[in-house]
Image 1 (cartoon, rainbow, N blue to C red):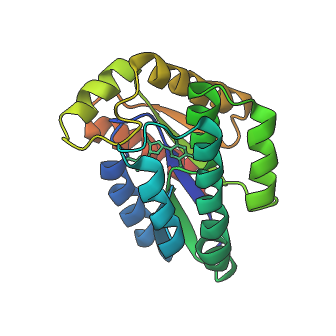
Image 2 (image 1 turned 90 degrees about the vertical axis):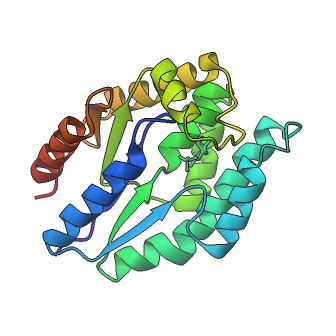
Image 3 (image 1 turned 60 degrees about the horizontal axis):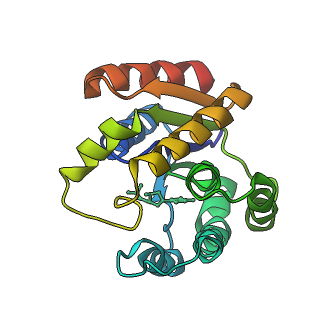
Length: 206
Ligand code: TMP
């Protein structure tokens, strides 16, 4: 069975965690050996970097520090977990990947795309997801949903305008490569969203 690298993206509150479990279950039922992971994170080193990046106590972190830490975490994740899993024939399902850097550090913080692309090449070489499911939601609605959770990392306390730029950057990337991305309207019920995801998986993973 062909292993796939599948990523799930979207602004805060888009419902990624719930859908991750369903996607993983669906893939396993199709016969895939599934490795679930997340970014920033996924390995011991990358999870330690995640703590530094997300921790609400670091308001002084510069945009470039944030970007490079996220890519340091990613380089280790690709090296230690993603590539070995794909090489072993396993399907990797990842909660966020490099599209989030283009959205949040690019769209959100205003870092030029070419700088992100340089780090992308360094950390991943030619590795790109086979399929990216973008759970799209207006930033305002996402923030309202995320507010109810209680946790407040450095991104959850960002402004509505920041998250809106991140959302737009996601949508622009998706529009630029429809063969890789499927945009799903996440403002609907969990069941409706899942139905669209399942349709996308059935159509794209042949
Ligand atoms: P999450 O695990 O709740 O999705 O949170 C991860 C946060 O990190 C989220 O707010 C988006 C942010 N992030 C970036 O800014 N750039 C990235 O490349 C990644 C992977 C995540």
